[in-house]
Structures are given as C-alpha cells and as structure tokens.
Image (cartoon, rainbow, N blue to C red; front, side, top):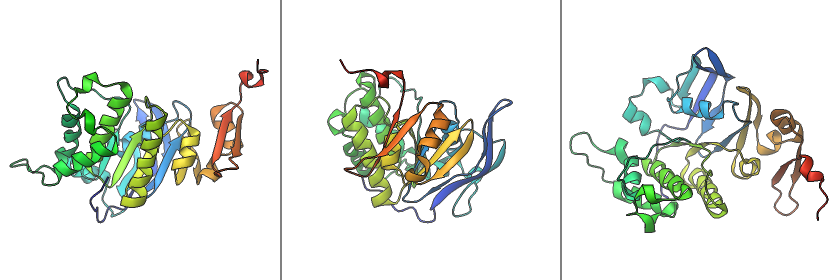
Length: 275
C-alpha cells in the first residue's frame, strides 16, 4: 500500500478532553497524542471510553471541554468536512452498508474527499483503490455484492475503503473483529507497514492485549474514562496495571523466543486438571 505524502500533518493531540453523553461524562481529562509513523493502541475494559475517545478524534463526538488539534496548529473544529476527511479516516465498529454495492464500489467511496467538486475527477483514485484492495486480499472479490460477504470479508472491505482514503492519520476501532487468525495477523502487519514505511499515524482500539503489545509503539490504558497508564508496551502491560483495570488476576510474561509480552487472565478453569 503506497500512501501519498502529507506535508505538515505530523500528528493529532488532545488536551484535558472531557466527553459526555448527555449529563454523563464518560471520558475525563484525557490528554493523548497520535504522531506520524507511530502506532498507538488504546486498551481497557468495556465501557472505559476507548471508542468514544477515538470518535472524538474523528470529530464524530464533540468534547464538552478541552482541545483537539493537529501538530501544525490547526484546530480540529476549524476544518471543513472535506478537509478533515483528507487528514483523518476512521474505521468504526458499527457501519450500515447500502444495498446493491459491490466490493469495489464500497472501496471507491473512500476516494470521495479527493474528487474535484466540478467534474468529480480523481487522478490517483483508481490506483489507490487497487492498492487498498490488494493490501486487504479483496482483488478477487471486486465484483461481489457486499451483502454476500462473510463478516470477516466485510470487515476487510471497509478497511480497504479507509485505506483508499489515503490519509495521514488512521483510526481503527477493533479492526480484527470477525477476522480469522490469518487476516488478524495480516491486518496488524499492514498497520505496521503503514506506520513504518509510509509515516501514517495510527490510533487503534484493541481488546487483545497480546496484539496491542506486538503491534503498538505506545499503549494507553483507560479505566472508567481516565487514562491511567501510558507508555511503551513493557511499561503499560504489567500485571499490576492489567489486574487492576480488568478486576481479575492477569499473568504477564515475556516470551523467551521472540521477547514479546504474553498475557493471560486467570480464572477458575485455569486450575482444572487436564483429563
């Protein structure tokens, strides 16, 4: 996947952001940064505010206080919808697919911000769509109706649409959901390639802690709407942090073969004697 240069867009950050649903504040005083060429994983229990914070970064949820802005000094609120879509793309958990679309047509939707207003021209669009479909393993399914896809295939089609949008910042909300093991690994490999080879800043919500430890440069742990730990995977994915956050004993070890973090929540079934 080849990404075009994005001069001047080196990252996005929040400062002391509060986010609420009605009167209920669900994210409190969150200050985070997404930087070019870096993968930042957001982890934490259900309801801790991960997805809400990600949506706020895409301007889909307005904070009640605090600031969100780009490294070049641009306030998130100051951009037009089109300009914002040229800087940030979000793969959310909940999406509605219109009837009658083929896979290629869905991926082509990602090029909408780049089309000229007068004639709808997009010189780089066809190549971007081909790259995105190849990167997600969908080339052979280009003419398939989206409605005919499995859950994992549909997830990859939506991700391909995000990749075709070709932005400097990519926000992914549980991108490995519904995917089998092969495509989970390939999607995470693609995330690393986007950061390492093309300088894309990636913010990703993950429930799999081992995946977060393997793919991320930085990890943010959220609990009840607050960022309670931030740093490298080694600094954040500790037994104390995870056991406290998830309210269950979590064993954390380093794999002797590859040096990566391995986590395991210990329940009663762990004590069973093998048959």
